Structures are given as C-alpha cells and as structure tokens.
Image (tube, each protein chain N blue to C red):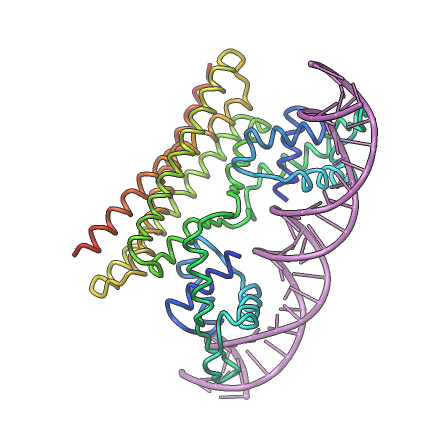
Length: 179
Length: 179
DNA sequence: TGGTGCATGTAACCTGTTACATGATTCG
DNA sequence: CGAATCATGTAACAGGTTACATGCACCA
C-alpha cells in the first residue's frame, strides 16, 4: 500500500516517467521509503491498470509520461487522511542491541560505537542535504518544500539523539564491566 | 534473516516453546522486531530443520521445548558481529509527512498533532515498561537486562524528540499559513 | 462440562529484493 | 563508433500478514 501512495504522491507533486520517479526516490523520499527500480515499474503499471494514473505522452525510448488521475488523487487523500494500519516498526540495529549480551563485552561496546559513528555520518549527510535545499530554495518556498524540510528535520533530530544514546550506552556498559 | 536471528537469540537467552517465544516477542522484542504467530512457528521449524535449534522435550498438547544448538549459536554470533545488509529503514508516518502538502493546511496540522500525541502515548507506555523492569529486576542485574534496558532507553529518547519535533512542525506550519 | 488458555499448523496473498535482460538515444 | 545514460521490463525468491483450522489440558 505505502509504495503505491508514495508513487502517487510524487506524481501528484510533479508528473513524470518511472525513470524520473526513481531519481526522485533516491534523492529524498528514499530516506523514509526506499523503492527498487523493479518494484517501481511494476507499481506504476498496476496504478495505470486501476486507473489511478494515466499515460499522457510517450517519448523516445518508450518513455511513458505519467500523470495522476482524479480517482488517483482521491485515493491518495484517503490514505493521507486516515493514518491507520501503518506497517509495524522494525529496526535491525536495535534488534542487535537486544542480543548484544551474547557477545563479549568489548565487542558489544565496539558495536555501540559503530552505531554512534553511523548516526553521526547520517547526521552529516542530512546536514548537507538541508544546506543544499536551503540554498537552492531560499526564494520559492512552496508547501511540498516545507514538508520535505520537516521530514529532514526529523531525521536530523533523531539521528542526533541516536548518536548521543549510543555513546551513553557504550559508556554505561564500560562502567558496568569495570565493577 | 532478522527474524531467524531474533528467535535464535531469544532461545539462546532462555529455552522454551514457540508459544513461550511468542509471548516474549509481544512483551519486549516486538517493539523493535514484531513477529506474527504464523511466522514464528514456521521459522522455528526451519531452524530445527537446519539444525540451528533442537527439540529437547515434548510436553502436553504437543508442546515442543526448543534449545539452541552449537551451530545455531555460532550463526547468531556471526550475524551479531557483522552488522551489514540490514534491511532498509521505512517509516510510513514520515512518508505521510512528505505528502502532507496535498492536504489543506489545517488537516496537515491536525496530522502533526496526532503524531505528537502518538509519540507521547508511546513514551508513557515505555516509561511504564521501564518502571516495571526496574522494579522487577533491581536486584538480579544480568547482561541481557542491561541491553533490553538500553534498547528501551533508545525508544524513550527517540519518542521524546519525535513528540517535540511534531509540535515544532505543527507550530511552524501554523506560523507559515498566517502570513 | 464448558470456557479459557495452551499449542501448533497451513494456505493464500502481498510486498520487496536480486539478478537478469533488452534496447534506444545522445554526446563526445 | 563507443560509452554513458535513458528507459522499461521479467522471473525467482525471501519475508511477512491474514485468516482459517485443529485439538488438548486445566480449572471452576
């Protein structure tokens, strides 16, 4: 369901081909809902079959320009306005933390450190992204920019506390093992 | 892969039946890696087939008591020590934020508020969980308690910033729409 | 003896990943 | 002309969800 909506939403913001969408996924939305090439093309065909999007033009190399239809727009609004049945939260990194007691304490500490490093790396990547958005769009502020920026802000804040938390946990573990 | 390890890990901490594991998933690990009943039983059979766990006892009602084998333990350590190929991060709530520009601004703001409320509710649930753990296990502190507690702390901190962020975003949106 | 909880299993379906496959166009 | 990029598709498989199905054991 979610990928369906993600594609529909991106097309609603701006029409384009599967190839175009793929790039837009990689740039921004892939951070909250990644999609593979194969999955996207399949989904676009399904969306077209159910009349939620339509082909407005066929260009060179069989390029299909898609656009959201009225029923597609309605479908998206329905999903946006009824935030239920969202897929459950899964976090492999945290699962690993849960099982870290099975590793010798120095390896566990090392893992927590790599978590902190990873979070910091993401943080820096997000900061660059933010700066490039802010530089690029300082003037023409439309709504979709605002929300993309808000989602990015979420990533920034969460990754920052994640780094802090991992450091805290590593230190706490070290203090424990010294006793 | 991850569920396989989650089951293996829980069994390594304490042997038991599928039914036992299911309860343990719901209580704690389900917060980072949920599993359905059907999935778990299937996985346990696969694990037994590949010799990573073994049946040590068959009780009433066909109850199978499982225990991790040596090769199962090795498999788990391998996964723990090599944190790569983790499944990608997906967040339906944040996807919705990305597409909120398609909604009228007051509905968008309402959604951000429900996000804040949801985060706060989780926060309270996690605080209760923390208190019950701290009360229950104040004395016999073993390593697996430490890491379960650390994972919980992660949830607490992340949900706290999530609530703050959602409030911030809702306010920023309101300020924008007034201009 | 009847309800609740214990205990496991199966089948259909949907989502997502990896790998393979093909070909047109553009630009240097 | 050759390489990079544009552009789409298919097939096999792995992981996960929902719904259905069955039956024993225990306790009041």
